[in-house]
Amino acid sequence: MSIVKLPATPRIKRRVINRDKLEADIVVVAVRVFAESGYEGASIATIADRAGLSKQNLMYYFPTKQALYERVLDDVLDDWLERMDSLAAGDQEPQAVLRAYVQAKLKFSREQPWASRVYAMEVIGGAQLYGAQIQRRVVPLLRKDIAVFEQWIAAGKIAPVNATHLLFAIWAMTQSYADFAPQMALVLNRKQLGKKDFDDAEQLIVDMVLAAVGVPLVSRSA
Image (cartoon, rainbow, N blue to C red):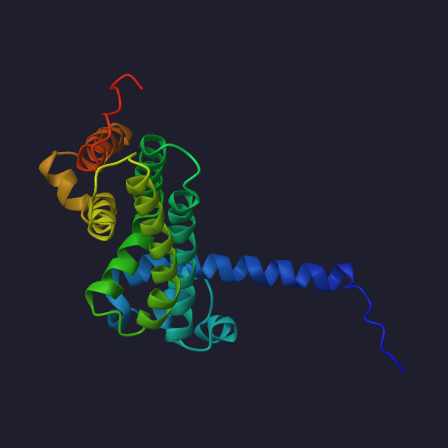
C-alpha cells in the first residue's frame, strides 16, 4: 500500500519560516562576533546574549560553535561565489566583464564587511576549520574563470596574462576595502569609508586590471 504524502499545513509552513528567520538572525549576530573575536575568542554565550536568546535556545538551532561558524562561512562563500560567477559566464567583451567583476567584489566588501573579515581571518589562520569546503567550492569556479581568460587570449581579445595571479590580485585589492577599511578610514581622517571612496577604488582597480590585459581603459565619464 503506497503512502500518500500530504501537503504541509499552514501551521507547519509557518513554523519552518519562523525557524529559517530565527537561524538567519542568529547568523547575522554571529558574523559580527566572529569578525570581532575570531573563532577561538567567540563564544556561544556571547552570540546568544547579543541575539536575545538563552544559550540553550541558540544551541537548539546550532548545537556547537563549529556548526554555527561553518553556517556563517557557508553563507559568506555563497555570496562571494555568486559574484564570481559573472566572470565564468564570459558572454560579453572583456572590458565589460572585468569591470562588472570588480564592481561585484567591491560591492561585497562595502555591503558585507564583517562577513569578509570572518572569511579573511579563517584563511589567514590556515583555513583549519573550513579549508576543505573552500577547496571544493572555490577551485572549480576559479578554473572556469581561468578558462574564460584563456578563450579571450586565444581570440586575441586580451594580451597574454597569468590569469590565476591576476584574479588573486583582484581579490586582494577589492577585499582590502573590507578587511582593512578601519585603517583606510584612519588614514583618510574619517569615521568610515563612503560611496565616493568605493567609486574611486573601482575606477583605479578597473584601470589597473584593463592595463594588465592590454584592453583600452574605461572612460572616466563611463
